Image (cartoon, rainbow, N blue to C red; front, side):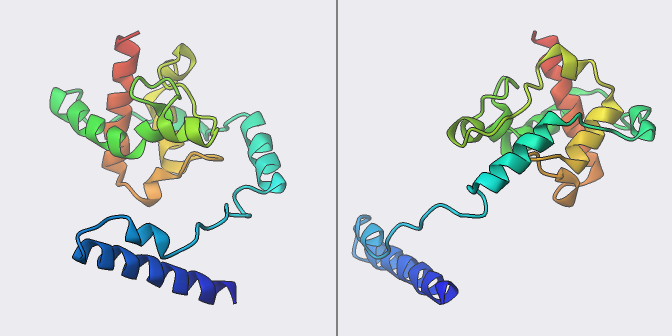
Length: 165
């Protein structure tokens, strides 16, 4: 039943938006659908407890990952491609300065690691790659969306935070 309501609501929202655009206005789309309540799965006490437990546990990385070497050259081009990937995929949580204070992390009170911190910068490229690729807690497993090469580009860019400290 709730699914049917949500579909009608989504269709109503889209129809309102299109009608508003066609009529030259932008307010009518907002009147066509009531706001949706926060997601109970994401905002439940159980989900918050599970995230807190996950954060409290050390981030274990397989020993083989520790010795992985970045196969990409350390060039301005690779770092720039990494920067572009970072802006799209990481900056929302980790922030423009890598301080963990991106707008998504702040708005939703998500704990984001300060990747400009010495403790993070001291980790090997292989460890950073593995953490980016596999994620943990609120950190997505980026290898499900990005290529290995893109994850390595992110590692090259993340190293630029070390140089700016």
